[in-house]
Length: 430
View 1: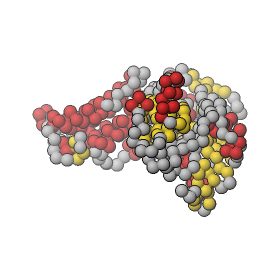
View 2: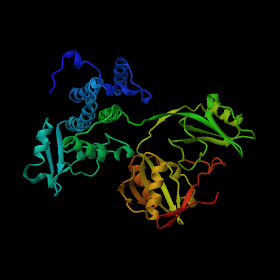
View 3: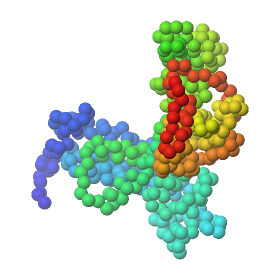
View 4: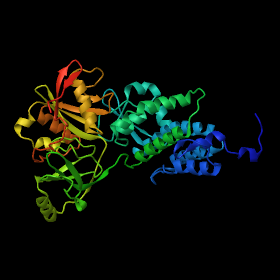
């Protein structure tokens, strides 16, 4: 080992100076590089509810990253420490969540309680006398007990079962998280760039904050939005500043509660075709009538969740229809309720539809119930009333919501796909 002076140790690492706000580029001044890299990770603060043990490990990761300007290898150390700290955060959250008394159910249905304030003691208790094969963790959420061995995989499964971690797309990242943690525990030499390490720190901060109650992907703020169209064009905007002027012909208008930045050009009153939740309020009619309704009703914006949304899909006469929300389904006429139904939890309607379409078409590898390899969870299937009951139990609003049947006429979004089989499906004629 070469013994360096303090002055030499303070020299910047040339490899660290090429990572700029615009990407990899010409060498930055050392002062600017240090300022920039610290600002990159300064965005990832923790909520005040996070305990000191977890917070200290997180701040250690950020400190290591900050010194990467002096030693490029430290970016790799920071990334690896971030992957390891995920398990510590889950362990730190586990016992306080149950107030130090964790219940297990054995194969005969008997209950066993383990009281401790140390996770290592719990870890040992569930392994003594062959209990690991016999005991299942009793969940506070009321869901079925789950196998729990205290390792990272089961800790992640526990956090999702108890609703501490959400998001079906994020759930798909749990397996890579475990693999990367295992790689760190049994490593070979590797080198990572500053953006890679920053992403790992961001992921760690997100998980920690969610474990202690901070929302992950929302809710989003929705506003009252007007949509106007004729036979050739469509426009939309928040009602306070809206004018149907861009629509050249006589405009038909509708009022919705939506995320203002969403693309509403394919709006459909019955089906979920927008990126974020969009609810019908009034219409269709002309703009003066819409303005009058706004003066009388004074609708306001709200907040809507964006993760783990519940969608119902209908399959009838070889046609799979686009996802709908349960309240709208409950308000459909009898003809539109025919067929078999499925309830899917997903972060977007597209994820739900793509899964069910491939499942029905016979594409291999898709699960008809529970979690799938794609970012969805199927909660139930059956008749309309059966699935509405499952939706209500899952927390969906199932009181009938009567909405008129219409959509933006220039939309090319089909309401259904025909399931052919053999991995194939077809679209209706436009």
